[in-house]
Image (cartoon, rainbow, N blue to C red):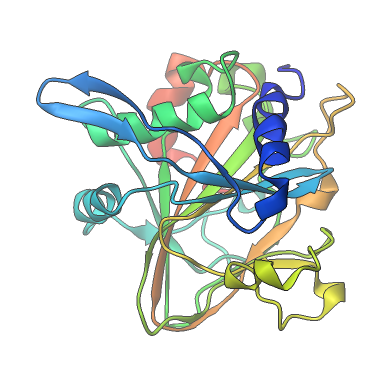
Length: 278
């Protein structure tokens, strides 16, 4: 299992250097690589530490507008009713959103986003540990995903080594948020919310303290968190339970980027279209 965490060493010095301007966060410099005519250029996103235990980091400007537009274009007409693992990979009233997986083999923009997620986590994470990127759509039909964890429980076959082990970390990025969208926040009820009012541009500060942290759906931004306890036990951290709150008006598309503990076997990767969308 990957140690906890090269990312922490990467981010905390940057955060400390900007402590006098907490609302701006740390800025990561632009890096780029080239594939044919397409240039993969990582934007200068900013990071803000929300929680150190469990590790939760907010990332401003993680996706560019061109990337968001591309993701919407390639996923058109591919969404289907989301499934959940505890329901044998079938749809459930626990989750009413629609979802789709993105193929990266011939899509350099998707590959660029995958490389960004890998770089964010440090040099020890291999491309073969990433699941295919998944888009999820919530519409004004009050679609939601009730409280759940991204990690699998001890008896779940989806955490076997051939499937890559458990989900060590998660990103949830906001690809599209229609202007008239209300609701649709991402709620972590067991995480203590920051108190400074400067957070209110990305957090729902109207939520009562006892309801934990609710992130507003802000297009282009992302949340990163680690799913496992840092003690090496391999157990999922119950404090990372979260929910996709109902969209009461408008339309929201998010993106899940999940990293497994070990490389995903080829047979398991080929079967991802049939996997439940936990």
